[in-house]
Image 1 (cartoon, rainbow over the protein chains, first blue to last red):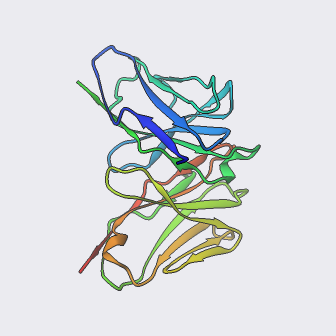
Image 2 (cartoon, each protein chain N blue to C red):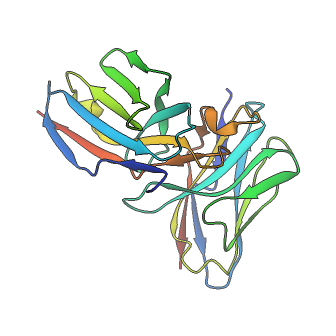
Length: 116
Length: 110
C-alpha cells in the first residue's frame, strides 16, 4: 500500500521542550510539505522540500526546523521557540517538478500536538 | 489581496439542493487549482483538480474563470454524506507550493 504515514497521531509537549513529528512516504515523490492547521482555519505552509538535501521556508517557519536527508522522510521539529504550537500538523507530498505547485498534493493523516 | 480566498461558511442546505462555492486567487499566472474535501479531524483529500476551463465528476463540477480570477465548485443533488469542509488551493506567488483557503463548511440536512 503506497501512502504517507505520520506519527504519532497525538503528541504532548511540555514547556521548553523540542518535539519531532515524523513523516514518511513510499510514493517515490520528490516534493514534501508541512502545513499547520488551527481550528476553523485553513492550512498554513511551514516548510517544503522539492528535492533531497534542500528545503525552503514557508509562510510560518519561525520556531520550526526540518531536514530532508532521505527522499522518503521529512521530519518536522517544533522547537521551544514556537510559543503557540498547539495545532493539527499535516504532511503532504507531490511527484515533484520545477513547478511543484502545479501538482496534486497528497496528505498524511496528521499529528495533533498539544501543550501540557 | 490574499493569495487564495474562499467564501465564508457555513452553508446549510437540504438534501437534493444545489450549492456553489467560490474561491478567488491573486496569482494571475496560476494554471492549476484544486478542491479538497476535509472531514472533521481528518486530513484533506483531493476532490477535483481544475485545469484550463473546468472539470466535471458526477454531481461535482469545478470551473475556472481566468478573467475574474476565481474558481468555483458546484455540487448538485446534495447528499448527507457531502457534509464536510471544502478547501480550495492554488499556487503561491512564487509558484513553488500550494496555498490553501480557509475552507467552506457545508452541512446537508434531511
